[in-house]
Image (cartoon, rainbow, N blue to C red; front, top):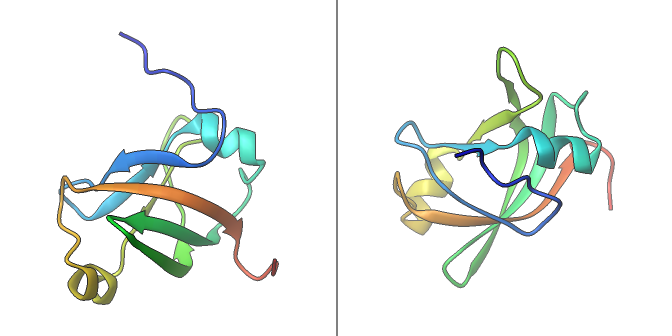
Length: 98
């Protein structure tokens, strides 16, 4: 079954076993950030809103999808583990301001 396209934020997803979060191609295209290498990402985990600044957007081989790693300090501080659910609230190319 083909995944349902993502048309915007917020976007609910799970943390991969390697502590990365997948941003599907449809979300990347909707947000118009295909060319971004780094982004400031705001996620929600439980009732906590967490800002991940300057996250490297790793490219996939054949699609516009991107992945970013939740930094170890953030995972440890908030108790985020692989397979936990997070909500992406905001993604902005790094250095662009509000």
